[in-house]
Each structure stands twice: as C-alpha cells, then as structure tokens.
Length: 81
Image: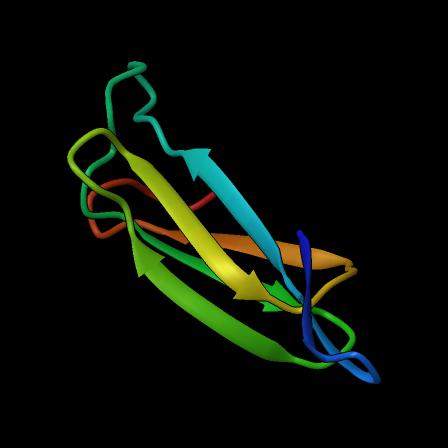
C-alpha cells in the first residue's frame, strides 16, 4: 500500500509498507487459536510476532516492502513440521 500526502505545493511525503494475513488450522481443519506466528524479513533480519485469534487468523501490517519473508508458526499444542 502506498500513500502520498502533499504537505505544501513544493513538498510531499510518502509512506509505504506491506502486510501479511493468514489463517492457521489444526491437522483436523479446525482453527488453531493462540498459535504464535513470526514473520521474518530475510534481507534485514527484522521480525514481527503475533498470536492468532479465536478463528486462527492473523494480520501483520507495517512490514518492510519486498521480501522474501519467512513465516514461522510455533504451536505449544502441535508438533512442528
């Protein structure tokens, strides 16, 4: 998403960021609520961590533009694969 704001006739400022949204499910197909999801921006090494809601959904916004990204899912209930 890109937003440009004109501050005056000779000056403008732009802000650009990315977002990732998804849903984590159990092996049985149900919502995996409370699962930790970490988004790693590979080139810079910066991370953002969120926890899924009751529907197993998550949204991470304000990410650096471009990738690649690595999505790491960490569950205390299910074995990592």
